[in-house]
Image 1 (cartoon, helix red, strand yellow):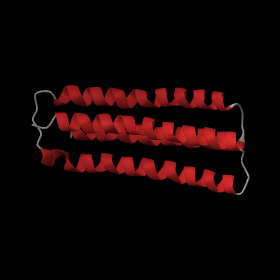
Image 2 (cartoon, helix red, strand yellow; image 1 turned 180 degrees about the horizontal axis):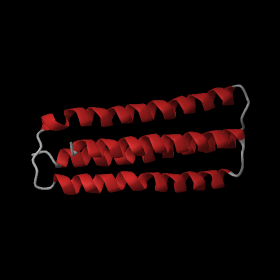
Image 3 (cartoon, helix red, strand yellow; image 1 turned 120 degrees about the vertical axis):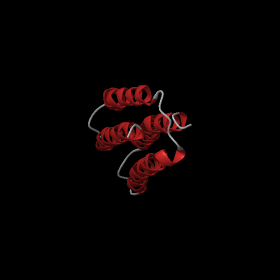
Image 4 (cartoon, one colour; image 1 turned 120 degrees about the horizontal axis):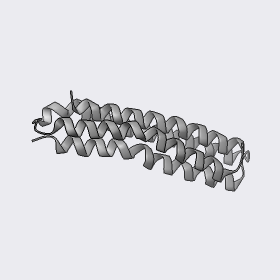
Length: 143
């Protein structure tokens, strides 16, 4: 049951960060304000979203101390977390391809394209941070 705390942390982080990313990405594309302010708001949202997953990871690591788990105990949690990596990449790269399509049809300017692309790559890194930590901790608790 403890390995699933890491999975829950990863799910909360990925879903939350991807939803914040989509809002920020759409705001940049629609020109709803200064790009720097949109990015600052995005980073603040990410910090708030990651608070609960970090607490869950700490709780899971503390509860796992003194217990022994085998690799068979974490196969399903590992598969779920790896699936989250794929989900994250799929969502972000689909947004990037949307931007490329808009750029080819001359509906957005070059600086908007660069800002949207930048926040996309930042979102990939931020959304994968907690799943990576979860993977490392799940492997650490196995004996």
